[in-house]
Amino acid sequence: MPQSVKSNAESRMDKAVQVLKRDLSSMRAGRANPAILDRVQVDYYGTPTPLNQVGNINTPDPRTLIIQPWDKTVLSDIEKAILKSDLGLTPMNDGEIIRISIPPLTEERRVELVRATKKSGEEAKVAIRNIRRDANDEIKKLEKTEISEDESRRHQDDVQKLTNKFVASVDELLSIKEKEIMDV
Image (cartoon, rainbow, N blue to C red):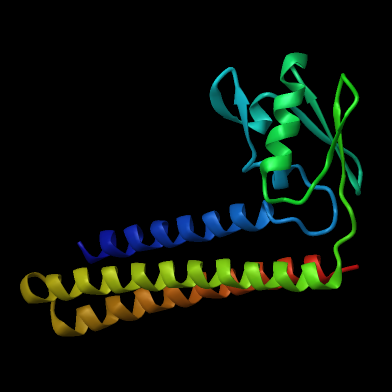
């Protein structure tokens, strides 16, 4: 039974790290990355649809994104959706494709992005610690009925080791993203 508590905690912690990875990949870091458009929703015939489901997104060079919609009638909707997003990008529509030039980040914007990444990382760490608390509570409940106090302590130590491992991976992801953002 304590084994299932630990494996459940491990899978939940892994999901928290995966969410952080997805959030960090969608943050703009100075070079063109199709993932920065993942959160953009296009009004496609009255239905909010993710941008990557209405066309191809390519990066021909490190400073340009090209969106080639499958349906040309949706070009203006894509343009509006990008302008409405808080990405600060200006799309250029040529009737066939939409071209987005990624401007170099200012130092001030880089600092803001680093602050935002640290905030996301802290949220992930809080989620991991909450999972640890839940797992420890379950182990303590089991201590009253099924396992000894020594076993309970050992399982709680195992949960703490898991927590430390996942917090370290969050720190590693944050340092990589911070270097990527601050790289000029």
